[in-house]
Amino acid sequence: MKYDTMLCGLIRKNRLAEDIFDFTVEAGKLAEAACPGQFAHIYVPGKTLRRPISICEIDRDHKTLRFVFQVRGEGTRLLSQAEPGDRLDILAPLGRGFDLGGTGRKAVFVGGGIGVPPLLEAAKPFGENAAVLAGFRSGNAVILKEDFERAGNRVMIATDDGSSGHHGLVTDLLAGLACDVIFACGPTPMLKAVCRAAKERGVPCQVSLEQRMACGVGACLGCAVRLRRETGEEYYGHVCKDGPVFDAAQVVWED
Ligand SMILES: Cc1cc2nc3c(=O)[nH]c(=O)nc-3n(C[C@H](O)[C@H](O)[C@H](O)COP(=O)(O)OP(=O)(O)OC[C@H]3O[C@@H](n4cnc5c(N)ncnc54)[C@H](O)[C@@H]3O)c2cc1C
Ligand code: FES
Image 1 (cartoon, rainbow, N blue to C red):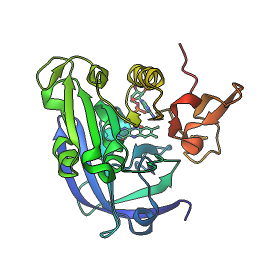
Image 2 (cartoon, protein in one colour):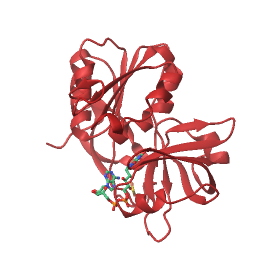
Image 3 (cartoon, helix red, strand yellow):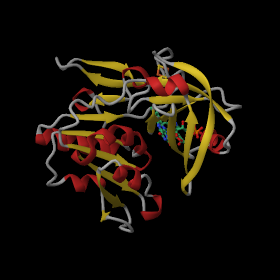
Image 4 (cartoon, helix red, strand yellow):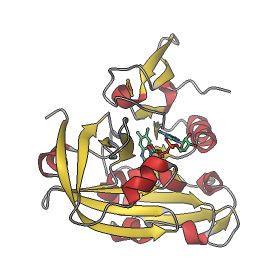
């Protein structure tokens, strides 16, 4: 299956932090088709454009999808008001997710803030072979730590104010950590630093990018991103269709 729309019943709703919500929806065939790192485009009543939210967890046995999102503006505020029993109009699964390769490799997952949820489903199959480095503003914004630990991942936390884990940047935690592959999602400065570290070590790296989106399926050219071919030639791709996950070597970072 490519992608489809479905009215998905909201079966679980939790509040993980002040402005962060955790939804589990019945997603039938969408859950069967979804892969780690892909996203859903969720319709918000009253808004013309759907809102893109990454798939945090996929439960193929129970045919559910989990989404963790932060209230940023009006669309996500309205979405956060949905209650169990309500049905959400979801277009999914969209985009290209993480290419996990061999899960026997030592992997490092680096997430910043609301960039942490898309890493959960990707890190799970790596079990104890994965170190998850997760950065947040402060201790009360830390989310999903126990979820990664349940999967057997080793979790290291960094906070800006030092109220939990390492006091400083999440990328500081990369120092001295040996690995075969790096996966990352979070703010652009963090992604740039992760890509630099991966390049210095000669380790492959995949990054999940965010971009303002409209159609979500490659039809409107609204989510252009500058990319580089192996030959060095630059071109524009689409975050919604060619990504959101890209090989770090492909991405041309704007200064
Ligand atoms: C592929 C993809 C996956 C995403 N996954 C998640 C996720 O798992 N959890 C989550 O909380 N958010 C995620 N986002 C971001 C989320 O889509 C936006 O926060 C949301 O669309 C904002 O809608 P709004 O109506 O609440 O805010 P708006 O009123 O539209 O905007 C409010 C603020 O959010 C910023 N913003 C809006 N859209 C984006 C965007 N696409 N990227 C970055 N900043 C934006 C605006 O610049 C503005 O400052 C993802 C975005 C993309 C492109
Ligand atoms: S959002 Fe329309 S092309 Fe990507």
